[in-house]
Image (cartoon, rainbow, N blue to C red; front, top):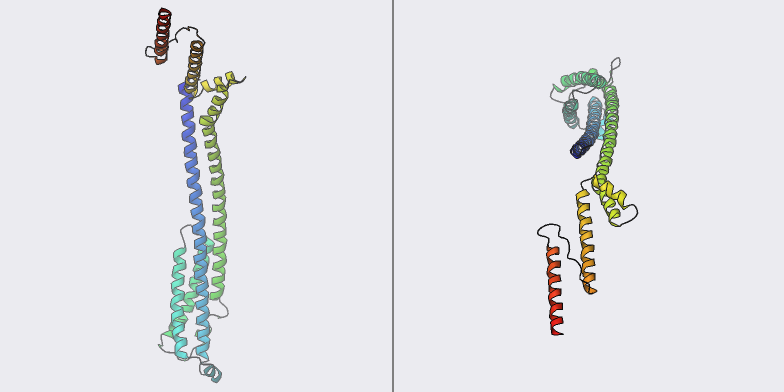
Length: 301
């Protein structure tokens, strides 16, 4: 395999690994955000349903209080018909507002079961709201009719409480399914992310870690140096290794040259590696100075 083709393959693997890493990281972030949104939606929906049930209970108790407002025991307790009437009107508005908020939480991807339960809840509330509207149209807390009194407990039809319960159960089932799906995709993307990180670490080790280790072993002049040197020749570190080997050989030549000079021998000048080799020129200059010094000493002696 030629060096150019090998380099192209390595670059392709790097591009694939980085793209794989970015894609898996994006998937992990997206599914984590999706899970957070599902948890927030579940919390918001639960709070709205709880408030709806609370206001429905306030309306029912207000109707009961208004129906028995003339009873001596009720008056003794201190029920105020005007206050109960205002509470009934306020609770009715709050229930309508919470139903609108719940409907706004529904998305085009909402399952049919939850949409059907919401339609039933809206239908039950429409019946109750119609009865309450007829009573509240009087404008003052007058006698409560039997129809208004039994708006929440009319036999033979579903009640508002049952509709709320069914809608809550349908939403919980759908949110559980969506959460499981999002969690499964999150785990899948996370596994892909770990694989891409492992692949990236492997490429980094092959690009820098292993050659550095081979170079260290090759420069230690061990028995396995030729093997490590052969491995380095096939990498981008081969030129650096050859340069270090050259500098090492040059240093040994200089060391041998200086040793010969110190021992009084006249060594040959260093072989120049190029026309501007400073070490070769310095060795030639040093040998000429030594010859001149010896000649002067012989003439003086």
